[in-house]
Structure formats: C-alpha cells, structure tokens
Length: 83
Image 1: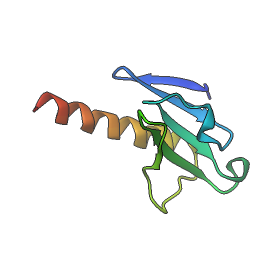
Image 2 (image 1 turned 135 degrees about the vertical axis):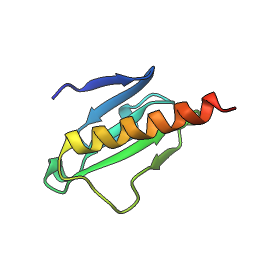
Image 3 (image 1 turned 90 degrees about the vertical axis):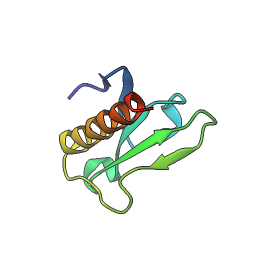
Image 4 (image 1 turned 45 degrees about the horizontal axis):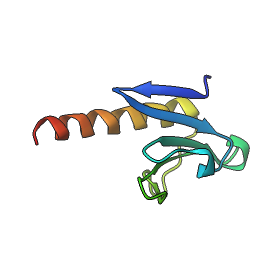
C-alpha cells in the first residue's frame, strides 16, 4: 500500500505509528504495534495538535482506516459546500 494518498485535495499519510511526521492539516493512518494492534486515524491541526478521529475503535486493516478517512473528508467537503 502506498504511504501517501490524497482525497479531494486533502493529504493522508500512512505511518509506522507516530503523528510527528505529519504536517499541519494532514490526516494520518497510524499503525498500532506495527499494525498488529490495528490502525488508528488522526488529524494534525494547524497549531500542531493531534486528534484521534476514531476514538477507541481501531481498524484491523489499513485499507479500512483509509476508507474511513476518505469518508470523513467527503463529509467535510459537503459541510464546506453548505457554508
């Protein structure tokens, strides 16, 4: 699976488990225990703060986490269009 993705102009990065490599505004799909513990979805805000977007739910496969991020981005795009 590719490490860098883009969806509707938003960057998504698959990482080995740390959000420190993310730039502000990027989404991350993070491996938990090298992927053995699942995958988490985060967003790094403009101020450098990182928010986990899937709460306590972890995805078994990185593809599932990536699909979740893309759905979130699509929901954000719909929200932005209505503003």
